[in-house]
Image 1 (cartoon, rainbow, N blue to C red):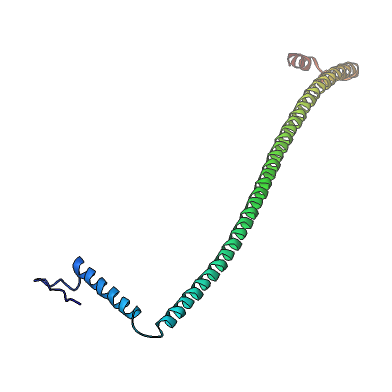
Image 2 (image 1 turned 180 degrees about the vertical axis):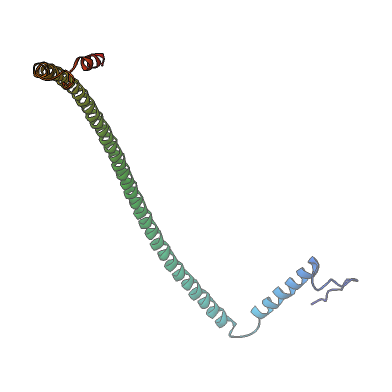
Length: 187
C-alpha cells in the first residue's frame, strides 16, 4: 500500500479539502474490505448471523410498519367519525338556529299585530269617548236650555205672584218693584 504524499500546505483540520476527504474514504473502505476478506473461519458464520440480524431487523421493521399502518387506519376511521359527528352537529345547530329565527320572526309579527290591535282599540275608545262627550255637551246644552226656560217660567210666576201679593203690601217691600224690573230686564 502506497503512502500518499503530503501537500506543501497542510489542510486545516476544521475544513479538510476534497482530496483529503476522498483519501480518508478510500482508506476506510479498504479497511472494511480487508476485514471482510480476512482469513477468519467464522467470517461466513458472522455473515450468516449478520444476514439473520438484518432479516430479523427487517421483519421487526415490517411488523412496526404493519402496526403503524393499523394505527393510521384506526386514526383515519376516527377522523371520519369525528367529521361525520361534526357535520351532524353543524346541521343540527343550523336547524335549531333556523327554528329560533322563525320563532323570533313569528313572535315579532305577533307583537306587531297586537300593538296594531291595541292602537285600533285605543282609537275606537277615544272616538267613543269623544262622541259621548259631544252627546253630553248636547244634553247639557238642552238641559241648560230647559233649565233656563223653566227659570223664566218660575221668574214669571214669581213676578205674577209678587204683583198679586204686592198689591196688598207697599211697593217698596215687594222684591219685584218697578225699579227692580228694569234692572232685571237689562240683564
